Length: 231
Image (cartoon, rainbow, N blue to C red):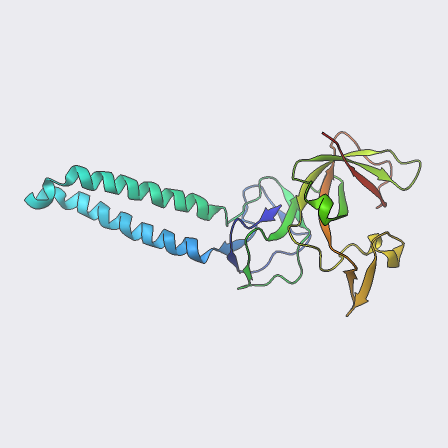
């Protein structure tokens, strides 16, 4: 899951659902304004101290302070490196070859997003995925990496092991998976507004991956029930 560690602005062209990424490739560029300002100040301080250290030997007044300047420079350098590492968390790169799913279609350039915003999910296209919706009480007990089971509605289909890839931090505003809604025979109660399916109550979208050792016997989509594995 691509989740913002803090408030930031979305930059550049927005990725599209189904877009492929190679391992190490930048997924989306975001700009954390506060962190960026801290980083700029840290860079300037480091540069200033580097100059003072390099010129200290030519001046009797600063020669005696050389060791202090060197310590200050090392501290400034460490601070800048720490901020740079933190800044890179806002520049998510693909940890594996994958395809983007679960992207909010309303995302756009120069849009400010709050902390913990779930932007999208990168999946392995060779793996089967399961989309589930849960109520708030259940969402609070689910975490990335948790295991569960998918029990298909079709009787002759096997139960599959699942692993949670992501869970949205905010309640779903629009149901993207029409097949799960009551208008298509699913269990999620929705109302239609301006061509969109709006859930009747607060629910949260969860993306799960089917265990690599298990495969559905059917290659088409299927509805079912997801049960959380007890620990």
